[in-house]
Length: 392
Image 1 (cartoon, one colour):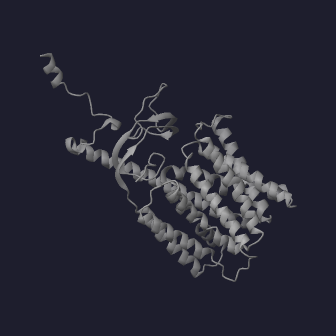
Image 2: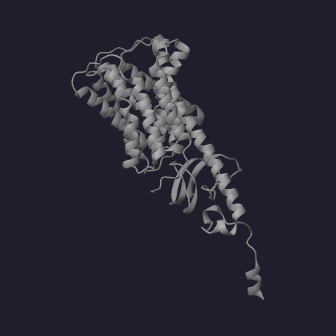
């Protein structure tokens, strides 16, 4: 009798998400459909939020140029870049100190520090130095055109080196967005440059920033304020040092203060949004959306500075709009395996976050703490975010 009672005993509830067997869809078809619908809705919300982050980053970065015009920032290019980066780093560091009521540990794991250091070296040191050298040997229009290489190289590294997923729609969308950037930056008059050394240096700078973008993705689950702040401080110090070494002089405070403010918004807050977008979209997709920055900057100039509208602008707008639409209508779903993982980021207790708490939890969500991910095998719509970096 005892064995029969055990055999007839019903389970106390449905199995946790990370223990659900693969044949649940046959045993519980209605429940599985509901779970799939919830997963799809959650994924759509996460993607929409991440897209807004990426486009917001592009808008702020693109606005930095017309803002500089409005404020009359007559500063040499190298020193101006340094001050903008410095404003970014200082502003974000102060913001983090205010948010945390003092200096708090960053929470990076030992395995994450090499990625961040590499991103700082490539994005904050090698990239600016290469660009500065290239600008001395090539025209501004040629350099602006070559800077579109960053998005292309970012995507190629993400797909070929870091094995990020890319289907046909993403590739076509990327091509359309980059083509719009090329059209917008194409020189209207003949541009002169001193040979191939200058353009090559600009291209190397783009490669450095492409490496930076892919390495930053590795730590994008960590504190975005710290990541963006430290990169801004390093890049600011490097560029300002180079500018002073070349005989440039810092502007007066009446010009320095607005320059730092533009840097905080156009480079600092923009980079924070870029890191947040990396969490949900991956490197290639975030880079594609961010490539709309020149168009958004031009649109701001037209709306607020009264600049003339040319057919080039509308052609670039059409290409970029097509590319963004292709990305927005992407759908990617297949059965995939989640390997065990330990990290710290803001989360809610969805299907990917079924874990115990080592502290007294007041049931507030979203919240942030170090947590472990158990292995999961399931299928749902997803993107190459911080939880979906699997092979295909």
